[in-house]
Image 1: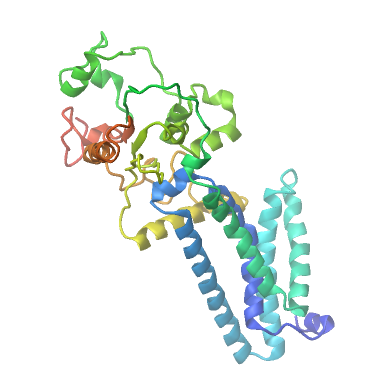
Image 2 (image 1 turned 30 degrees about the vertical axis):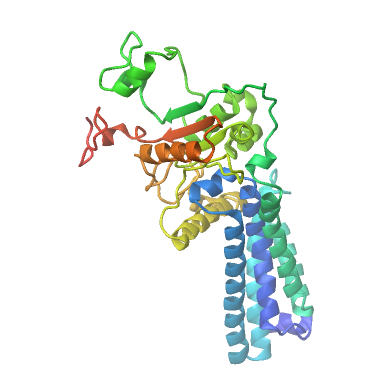
Length: 398
């Protein structure tokens, strides 16, 4: 190794801070940017964690600076305790291995999808070139700064592009001073045979639904658009009945927003209560509840960072490295927990919050009709409650 470094000449870039910048720039370009780009326009991912995009940007910047200082500290210790040649070898090896790993993964996912065996070879060439440049020039710091800006820009632009209400597709409403209020209740995985008898009548164990059925239309021939909530609910809000016909790209867009709800805010006070979906607007005639903040800010941000890391691992890394990260299918949070679609701590009994939201809307704008969307998961795991909704402990089949 000393023969190689001697042939390459004296190392000009002896700054531990700039070498740390080269390392982090590679990580940001290969991992952080793809992950942030994927979640930047995904309102549902942020609302499911109770985290604002701006808060995430601030925490991410602080974390990158802290990581940069940590790496610079390690390299500074190496410089103090090693000879110039030893430090050159250590810094070059660290940069080479890091860049080779991330460049190889990035190339596998992009240019060499059809021939992944060539990606490590191309990554080796990229790592060699970057290592040589990093020895000669102190360009790591500006590269790290520009890479970090590129990582946070998509999230910042999504915020300044306007909230959901401003970005919503306009709807032409016919003038109607007596526009009725709408209450849309989604009882997640409530089984039809449990609620209806063979003739389509509500069973007596559900007196509230039975009273509602007296002056409502009951559909006895119905089907679900999907068997996962993160597909089914957005599809309903977007008016989609055939998911397969939409294609995967369109459905990723559908899953990342709440469909028609923002467009209704011009005529309705919107109330939304759900463990995943949230709508917020700044006008005085719009109420919003739902996706309440669970735990303190630090715990929510830690959960958000962990789930973002899962997204980064699954999207930025190639197999077999991506297999070390949990699956992202069927849920928007708690990817590492192995729980169901809503994670391990989602609240089931949210009727009080839904009613409180309706009251806020009535008090705030008493003359404005209400659009209320209550998505309850009380029935999502029916073996935890009996037919009257009482909790069964320990859990057993009723």
